[in-house]
Image 1: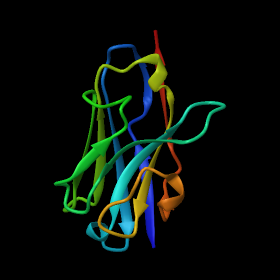
Image 2: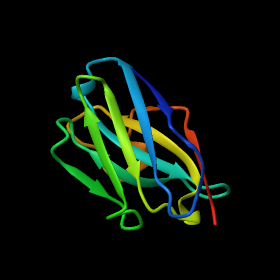
Image 3: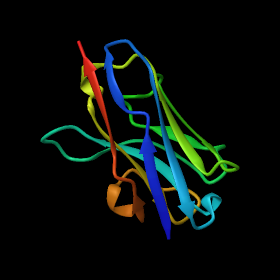
Length: 124
């Protein structure tokens, strides 16, 4: 089992940056592909970004490509989401997720473990 705890959310203005962190504990972190999803109020949870077990492979939703960067530090059991040039459309609860395999996909039901979420609010 893996326990995930997100941090780093907050209130920012459009154009600002934030870095989210997700600390993992329990099973061997490098056994898991990691991802970030988000859920705006009243909408479905959506894929944001994923990273493979080593950190060498990443992919993104089109809506965040070029603005967000996912990375991981296996020595620290932590995955990050650097978010630049934030827009009001990015406002959501952001969730960290773990897939028990080298890399997960874009569908939330593929993931085995989830954090509790962290709120990102972007004012225009």
